[in-house]
Every structure is written in C-alpha cells, then in structure tokens.
Image (tube, rainbow over all chains, first blue to last red; front, side, top):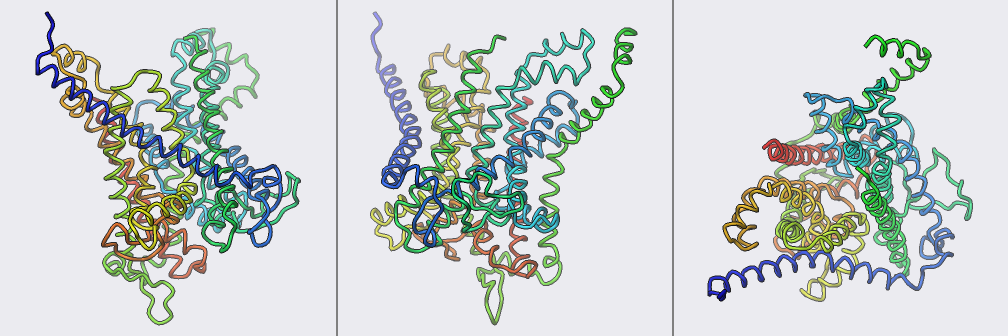
Length: 294
Length: 304
C-alpha cells in the first residue's frame, strides 16, 4: 500500500547526504582534538613524572622541571580569582536583581560583551599602562593578576547572571512578602540557591586565567626565575614570576636546543590542568541540573 | 505596610547602614564593566596618544608595508603588511570555520539525539578551553610538519597554518552561538514545515537557515572578533615575517603578534613603544565594532 515513490526515495537520499555531511563536519572538529591531545601526551610521556612537576627549570631551561612556572600560574590564578569573583558576582547581582530595563542596564550589558571581546594583547597593553606604570605596581604578580582578573570578569558575570536568573521569581516574592529587604532576600535566598551555578563560572575563570599568556607577558611574568623547590610560599605579591603558559612559549620559541620532550611535557601539564578544571565545571553543572527541584 | 516599615526601623542601626553600603557596592560593581572598558581605552590611548598627535603619519601607517621600527637611518612605521597579515589569516580562518561551525551547529541542533548532542556540546566546550599558547605550540609542531610534508613548503609556519589553527579556535564560539540561533527559531515553524511533509534537510535549508540568518551572522562576526584578537597562536604559527602574503604558504605577521613580539624590546615611551599602543587602539576599535555589531544583531533577533 505504502510504496516508496521516486520522490520519496530522492528525499530519503537527500536526507541521508545532508545528515552525513553535517556529521562529517562535526567530526572534523572533534576528531583532530582527540588526535592532537593523544599525540602531545605520547610525545611528553617519557618526561612526565612527579619530579618534573617539582623541580625548577635548569641549565638555561634545557633541563629540569616546571616547578617555578607551575607555582607562578597557581599564584596568578588564585589572586586573580580573589579579585574577580566578588566584583563579578556583585555585578551579576546588580544586573539580575537591581537593574531595571533602562539605558544604563543596556550599556552595562554591552560593556560586558565588549569586555569579553577585547583582544588579550590589548588587555596586556592596558595592564602595562594602568597597573605597571600608572599605579606603579611594577612588573609584579599583583599587576598581572589584576590584568587577568579584568580579562576574566565577563566569564564570571555571564555565568553568575545565568545562575541567578534560574532562581524562580516566586522564591523572591515569597521572601519579600514576609518583610525581608532586597539584600536580605539576595543574601539568604537567591545566592544560596544559585551557588553551584556561580561555582561553575568561577571554575571556568580558573581555566581561562591559567591558560592566558599575552596579558601576563608584560605585566608580571618573566622568562626565568628560580625559586625554592617545594616551598609553596616562594613568591611574594610584588615579585615577578614564571607562568606555565609563558614557559611553554619561551621554551618552544625563544630557547634553542631544548630537548623535545620538555615543551611537550609543559604543554600536556598546562592542557590537562585546563581541561580537568573545565571537566570539573561541567560535572558541577550536570549534577546541579539533575538535582534541581524546581 | 506600617508593620513592614516598623520592622525595618527595629533593626539595629549598623545593619541598615551595612545594607545600604552593600547595595551601593553592588551598584558600583554593576557599572564596573563600563569603567573597565573605558579604562582600557583610556590607558591604551594614553600610552600611545602622545605620538599619535606628534609625528604619527596616518598615511604611512595604513598604506605603507614598510615596518622598520628599529632602523638606524630611517625609521618607518608602515602597518599595511601587518594589517594584511591579520586580514589573511582571519579570512582563511573564517572561510574554514564559518561553514564548518554552522554545519556543526545544524547537526548538533537538528540531526542528532539528546545523548550525542550532550557529548558533542561538551567536546566543543573543551575545544574552546584549550589555551591559545597550546594551539600555538600545536601549530609550531604538528601542523608545521604536516604542512611541510603535504605541500612541500620550505617552512610550515605560514598563513595556512595560522588560518587553520585560528579556524579550530573560533569554531566553538560559532557553533555555540549558531546553535542558540537555531534553537531560537520557534518550534511552530518546524511543526508547520514537517506537517507539509518536508525532510529535515529541506526544513533546515528552507525554513531554519532563513529564519536564523541574523543569529548565524552574529555567530560568524563573533568568530571574526575572536580571530582578529588572537595573539599567542598566530605569533607562534604564522612564521613571523612582515610580509604581504601572495600565497597560502607565505609567512606573515599579524597586528597582535607584532605587539607581543616587540613590546618587550621597545623602550618605554619611545616612538616605537607608542606606535605599538596605537596598534592596540586599532585592534580595540576593530573588535569593539565587530562585537557591537554582533550584539545588535543578536538583540534584534531576541526582540523579534
């Protein structure tokens, strides 16, 4: 009764071709990622060890490990996080809880979008002009962290805003009805109910800050600096530091005759840190979605 | 009403004061993004502004390919080759990334089941997370030797390398914004089309693409913004030669890479240093316009 006419068959063929084509396009992006990560790990395998993580670069960065840059990256990330998180969360609270639908809100939203789009090297110029020179912080961990904080601010604002917006309006109304003020509502109802979402944004900020190179190049990161191995307090706020991302750039382009495994090892440590942190944020988000009751 | 106001009066004074303070702090943080955008423009302009008004040759900057900032005899700041470098890698990146990104967005949004969709979205998110310096390193090692072997080029660090790396870097943003744009097409459109007996391909081609074209355009624009502003990856992958490219296998240098490579060596407040900041102003302006345009387009879509 239902026979495939030539038209149907042609339609099915078209459908099949389209689907395959789009699938191939998608796979062409995803598969290289896996191949490349696999290749990097393969090349880095001989050098990856705890010792590699815990010893300073040696012999003009042609031997040794990545302790100094690793610790530098941790400092930069933690300090920029400490600066960006409160500002970003409060900014999102403003946008979602206080701002009315007027020109100011639109300008703020536009500024957030544009801040996210400013090239990283322009952030570097800004950090150099504003923090290193104008504020006289000099090339220091603090100046670099401030630059990173401003650069990653949009990430926190965007994800926090999303998290706040996901809290139902009824929660707030119930709270206002029992006489709570706006801030009390935010403090006791809105923020606790959106904490996992905010956490996701903070984690994403960590991964962004850890990977950036350009903004810290002229504001605080140096090519080489040996610190006491095993001492996690080896850097001070106004010291210059090494950073993993910058170290990878240095040993892969600036220093001749580096043993091949060294940059691969650095790349794998940097990449796996960033990907692990991102995976963590995805897990938090998925669990949050599964647990949400409203 | 009276009760509510009394209960506020009964609160300890410091608590009310603290609350007022916090609310002002929230407002301050709220507008911080505006302050930062202006701050960025102000400080970058401030460092480069002096030279901009004294001695900066606009014609030379935009029309001459001769970039000799360290010449002993005749210093020249012609940025045409750098602009051409940025343009060439960006155009190549977009030629690859826009079709692939939109194709992938269509596949993720229309052609695959929820399970696969979730997996692909996570993978694309991870793709977006790879630091640019790692992309640069991939360009320097993997892509470099691939290009040398496949095309017999003397050096694999060129427009092709940088463009492909940039394409891979900007695809995630195109996919995610593009997918949002497709998702924003009302389901009634899909249902109406399916009720007429179209296949999914016809649905995509005749209904979804026209309906979502603004959002897809915004996605492409954001990809352009990302590609123009990218620094480390192009610094490492394009071969670092100031040169107007004539083929895909020519080495180039981009605006961003020039700042990154030369700022460390230019003495503070020298002409050279200030020209690099002027390039920064140019980059800031380009990305500002591109992002503004993308945002206006997206907003237009939403208000419909």
